[in-house]
Amino acid sequence: YVANISLFCRVFANDQNINQLTKMKVIHTIKDLQAELTALRAQGKKVGLVPTMGALHAGHASLVKRSVSENGVTVVSVFVNPTQFKDKNDLAKYPRTLDADCRLLEEMYPQPDTREFSYAPLDTVMEGAFRPGHFNGVCQIVSKLFDAVQPDRAYFGEKDFQQLAIIREMVRQMDYKLEIVGCPIVREEDGL
Ligand code: PAF
Picture 1 (cartoon, rainbow, N blue to C red):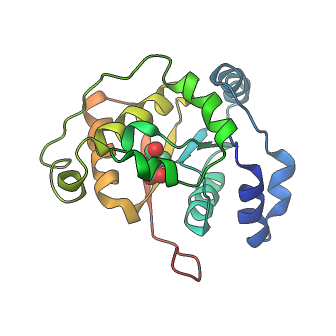
Picture 2: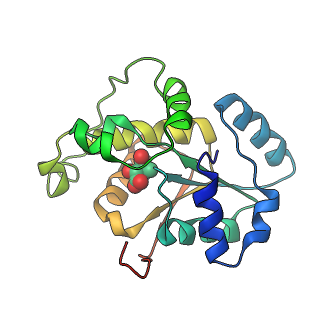
Picture 3: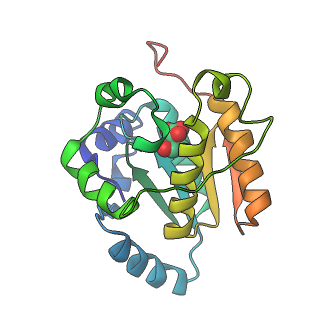
């Protein structure tokens, strides 16, 4: 479900791939998304998932392009996940589309998520040592997205290689039936 349509348009427009947009649907609820995907799966389409926190840039566009080339349908989730921000100032500063995020928040976390994911040492070193709880929050939301979308493949940037390694381990341990596709780093001209 793509909430941040103007940014998404910009990413595709920069890519001269604007025709893709004619087939794009913006879906706001998990129920509507699942109904849509059930129909598409019945037509034999594979589902790719690109989880994002919005603020889309060239890096995201490369993940979307890869997924579009490998799957019949691509779901781009746009949700700023509060459980991966320990510092609430960072969360407040994160660029986002507030209304859409608030709606999704109620759906993603109808109750507080108390699940604890622990993949030591993968999640206790480097970034994990500086931001305790961060990767737990990432695993909470990514597992919720996997459950909601049930993708055949999910795409993540190799830029966040620690996150990628942890998600791969989560998929292995929880036996998710999907392929994790790591994609090379792509940057905007300004380095973003
Ligand atoms: O890499 C990100 O943008 C986030 O950590 C993710 C995977 C979308 C989960 O919120």
